[in-house]
Image (cartoon, rainbow, N blue to C red):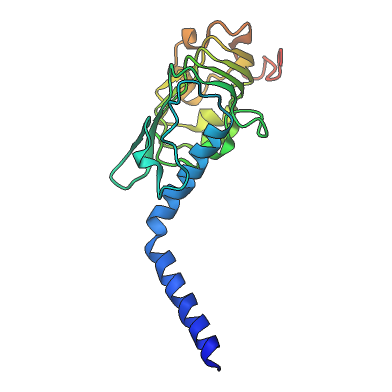
Amino acid sequence: MGISEKSLLGSLAVAAAMLAMLSPSASSNSEGDALYSLRRGLTDPDNVLQSWDPTLVNPCTWFHITCNQDNRVTRVDLGNSNLSGHLAPDLGGIPAEVGNLKSLISLDLYNNNISGTIPPALGKLKSLVFLRLNDNKLTGRIPRELTGLSTLKVLEVSNNDLCGTIPTNGPFEHIPLNNFENNPRLEGPELLGLASYDTNC
C-alpha cells in the first residue's frame, strides 16, 4: 500500500469519525431542509423568514421556530405573517418534507394566503397536538392519515376551499364542527359506509 493510499484511508477514517460525532445534528439538518423547502414556495413581503438560513447547522436559531433541548423542532409559528403562494408548487401543497419534523408539536400557518393541499405526510407527525391551517386558500380533501394522530387535540381548517367529507374517527371524534366551517365544498361528517369519501372533490 502506497503512502497516498494510506493518507486517503486515514482521511476517510477521520471523516467517518466526524460524521459519527455529528449524527445528532444530522437530524436537525434534515429538519432545516424540510423547513427550507417550506420557505422556497412562499412569497414573504414582510421578510418574516429572513433568518431561515439553510447553511446553519440546525434551524433552532431561526425566528418563528421553537426547539426542545435535543435541538429538535417542536413548533413552527407562521400564523398571520402575510405569506402567500403555493407551498412548494412542485409538490402541489404544503411540502411533504414537513412530515420529517418528527418532534413537531404545533404547526401554525393560519391567516395567510396559502394555496395547495394538505399533504398526507403530516400523518407522520406522531407528536402533533396543534394544527392550525384556517383562513387560507387550501383545496383538496382532509387526509385520512391525520386520523392516526392520537396526540392531535386542535385541528382548525375553517375558511378554506376543502372538499369531501369530515373524518369522524381518531382525534376527529373530539374536534368541533365549527373548526371546519366556511369550506363551501366540504360535506358534513362522513357516515362510515354511507357517505362517499370523494364527494364534491
